[in-house]
Amino acid sequence: MKPEGKYLYYPDGRRMEIKASPRPAFQARRISSWNRQVTARFDAAQTTHDNRRHWAAADYLSADMEASPEVRRRLRARSRYEVANNSYAKGLELMLANDCIGTGPRLQMLTPDEDFNDEIEVEFMMWTEAVKLPAKLRTMRMARCQDGEAFAVMSTNPKVRHEVKLDLMLIEADRICSDLIWLPDDKSVDGISFDAWGNPAAYRVLKYHPGDTQYYALGDEAVTVPSDYMLHIFRQDRPGLHRGVPELAPALPLFAQLRDYNLAVLSAAQAAADFAAILYTDAPPNGEADEVDPMALIALERNMLLTMPGGWKMDQLDPKQPASSHAEFVKVILSEIARCVCSTYGSVAGDFSGFNYASGRLDNQIYHKSILVDRSFWQTEILNRVFDIWIREYMLSRPFSVGSWTRIPRYPRHGWYWDAFVHVDPTKETKAQTSRLENHTTTLAAECAKDGHDYLAVLRQRSKELRMMRELQIPFNDDNASQNINPEPKENGSEQKEMANE
View 1 (cartoon, one colour):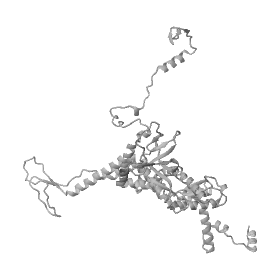
View 2 (cartoon, rainbow, N blue to C red):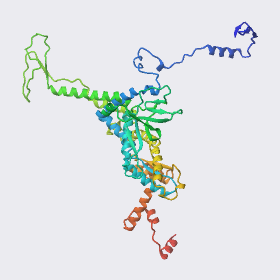
View 3 (cartoon, one colour):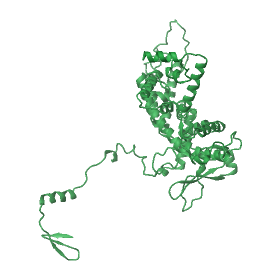
View 4 (cartoon, one colour):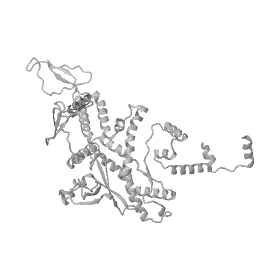
C-alpha cells in the first residue's frame, strides 16, 4: 500500500480514504519509534584493534565439534603428562578422589522388612569388598579429572568371591572411538551410537588401547557393548555434549607457567651460588687496565685481604630475580587452578597456615558443597544402576533367602551413605548437633547420615554397649539409658517412699 495525500492506494489500483486519527500525537510517536534504529550494543561483542588477538580463537562450533576427537586426545595427553610430572596436579586429582569417593559408599535399604534390609546391606557390602568397588570408583574419579570421562562395563566375572558374579571392568576413554567408515545415516559421536530420542544405544570398544603394541599388530578390532551394561560418567558443560573434556583443561597453561617460574627462580639461585663474585672494569676496550684471562678463577679464602689487578673491581653477582615474591606468585596461580574444580587454595596446596578457624572453615564449605553435588551425580549415574543389576542377580541366585519375595518391589527403596567431612572443632559441632536434636529441627537419622552412619546400626550398637556396661557394672553418665535398659524391679517399700516424696 502506498499513501498519497488523503488516499491510500493498493497494488491492484483500489483506493481507500485516510481518516484522521483521534490521537494524532500518539500515532506520530508510534511511527517515529518504528523508524528509529537500535543503537544499544555490548562492548564484549565489538572487535577492535586492542582485543582482536584476544578473541582470535573464539569459534561458533557445536559442543561435539568443539570437543572433537583430536582435541580431546591432545587434551588427555597433556593432562596426563601434567599429572605425572606436577605434584600439585597429582595432589589435586587424588584429593578429588579421596574426598568424593573416600572409603566407598554404603548402602541402606529402606523397605518395611528389616530382616530383608539387613541381609541385603550385608551381602552388598561383601560384594563391594569382593570386586574392590571403592578402589574402582576412585580410579574412575581420577580418570574423569584428567581424561574428562570414565567408562566401566558391567560384566560377569566367575572369579568374584560372591554369589553375585557381577563385576566392573574399567576402560580408558581412548578405547571408545568410532570406525573410520562414515555412513550417511550414522547417529554416533566418536564411538557412542544414539537412538532417535538421543539416548545412548551402544558403545564401540576397541579390544586394545591405541597406544599399545598389540593395537599396531592386530589392528583396530572392536566389540559393541549395549548401553544397559556400560557406565559412562562425565561432566556435561554444554547442551549437546556427548564426550567429556578433562576437568584440568583450563588449568593446563597455569601448571606450565608455575613450573617455568619455579625453574627460573631455581636457575637464578643456582647462578648466584656458582659465582661468589665477579670482576668488572670501567675502562674501555684496550684501555688502561691490566690483562686478565676471561673466565679466570680466583681462589678466595676466609678473612683474607685480596688485591685486584689494576683497573678491575670485584662485586657480588646480582641475580635480578624477584625471589621474594615467589611464594605470592605460587599462591595466586594455585588459587586460580583450584577454581576449575570448585576448590580453594588451602585445599589444593594443603596449607592452611595463613588461615584462622573461621576463614578456613568458610573456604572448606565451598569445596564441600561441590563434593555433595558430585556425590549426588555419582549416585544417579553409577551406584543406582549398579545396584539395580546387582539386586536382580541376587534375587535370582537366592530366590527364597528371606521371607516372601512377593512383598519386595523390583527396585526396592534405598539410600547411600558416604564418608563424613571431619569437623575442625568437634566440640562445637557436638554442641550444635545436641541443640538441633533437642529443639526437634533434625532427626537422629539425618545426623547419622551426615557422619556416614546408619542410625539403626548406631542405636543397636549403643544399646548393646550400654547393656554390657550395666552387666559389668561400669559407670556411665546416660541417665535415660540406665532407666530404660534392663531396669531393676523396685521393692514395694521403695515405691511407697517415692510416692510419699512426690
